[in-house]
Length: 408
Image (cartoon, rainbow, N blue to C red; front, side, top):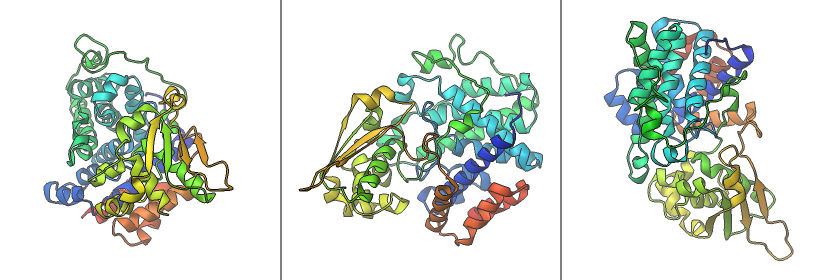
């Protein structure tokens, strides 16, 4: 954490900043945004509640968490307080991604079955990002991280009810990490063995913690971008369906074979709410079979009703080859019904679009930004404004002004 990011690392952070802005823009008209406007006077707190709403935020596969909606509100809040420049903001973000992912990747299957890692590991990322921008020394940074461990939490129970809790999980982690670093800056101490120590986080929430891996390359480079407005576990199936559709072979009924966790989270043949639909492989395949492109409008209650017949023709099952490769790889096989004279009606994907193995280019991220700016009710020119500030800007003030305009 003490080493300095280079220009390549900062350039990568800019892409993630742009992606987070797209997610915030697209969520402007969601019910969570309406509540945030009434409840929260601070625009960065409002932004913190929006980054995860569309299920399009960036994701780290091995850690099974979404860093962007946690790191950027924490880093921007600290940068606003410090009145720092863009490089300091980007360096703080790189360090925040590092801490959040490094800790989250040590959690095991038991943890993931009960706890939301974006929430449980998020406080570490928010604290590390703010600590970097506040220029805390090693001791104070350790206190902030230790206190993040001390208060971490976030249960998956919210997935079983039509509630807004998931958005709050990311915001809480961001704001809590910021607060703990602010306290540490003034000498507020914390337990440095809070992960592995007696009665620490591992003892309470993890059965078989994995070794923490810190390499020369910053972990932000291993984070995936999400092109589709659905849970990441549904993305390999969406990608496969798109390839079959492009070849004229996406014929219903369709069977999807994938890894066990994808079924645990996204085997939902009868979604009722928008969140249900985003966590439904069956609905995602129906979306693509209907000629749509898995944008936010394809997961609304109206879309759920319209696509019921197609959704009923999609079945899912586990395939051991994908489960054994997970979570390093999110894979799926999409098998369509062959028509007379056709062959090769299946696609097998080891990784999803936007993963480091299938990287997101400027075109994909630009298209996502354009789409979400429109979905959020902003003028198309706001996409150009956001891209210029995120990719080329030197002023944090301009970035804060952009968010203020969007969320006023």
